[in-house]
Image (cartoon, rainbow, N blue to C red; front, side, top):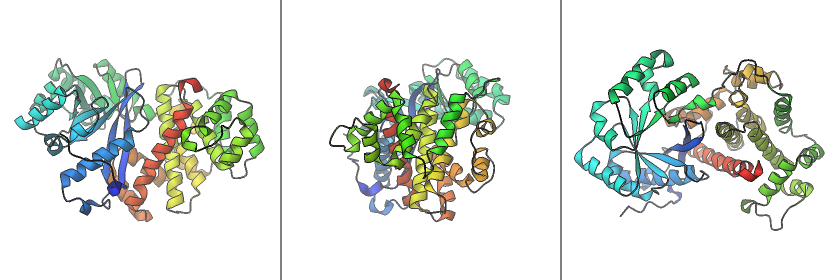
Length: 429
């Protein structure tokens, strides 16, 4: 029987992030869930360190897996002690994939515990494999083999393709499904496909796939410009109403959103004017920006990029509201929203920004240069990579504590899922 690790408020300050995993068609297959309690998250309140870690896993799983589509899987890292203590049984076997960390040793009791999980219907994944022969007992047992592509190729990437070819040749035939992790560009993605990988993890999907001769369409330009205008405090509410009324798809999605259970509306809303009255101009403008962002990225991969963009924007907005830094919340929302436009449109950021005038400091940050906004984008990326040490190091000089920051990212994730979930359902297309 698995231990009781039900949620309570002990871990309100859990750092939570998730990294998408794509199949070979670049559809989202699942996510690796990354979480850790912040240093101030009440560690002294739980005497048993294993139980503390298990509660972070259980609570983080609930937070990070919320909103996942049916059939998608969630990879969760398990250290050796929790494998032996059978904490994995607390997670649902049809969703959770138990990830064996690279520092787990293939000792008899560990292999027996893992076999018990397999016999109970759990899927096992071997993490960070780089050809180590001592890990072969795990490889033979695993359903998924995660190969550390960046670790094998090094920072030179595709130039060292022969190293990856050798590791895969030495591995030989395997019954595992091959997952390439830390795939950071499209060239490496193509190499991994060639070598038989069918699952891919890394930020290759957030890099622009430049198509020679492709231009940004006038419709896309209009949408980008509207995204900026909608953030202005003096944006005309009558224009907002007309934009929605003249687009049947927008009207339908607005009514679906405002009449959803989470909005708490007592009577069904069927008027755009009524919706504006109930939501307010600011909230409705924000909703419309999210919908437009979603429309810019109709592919499955594009939707994941849209999700990341909106979540970045919402997180930075909440951070500005809770931890005043002199930056306007609406400015930081736009910064996050625009941070992946190059990947969404298949153009360089220089080309994209030709069509929308922005403050120079924001432009510099979006192009990867130094500016007062650079910290904000670097912080969102550290969260996305699950680099918690970097998160802590970056927020400290700004007077932001870990318990302040952690729930804001989780709230941004939930908010984004709530809005984009309604935007992207099949009957909203």
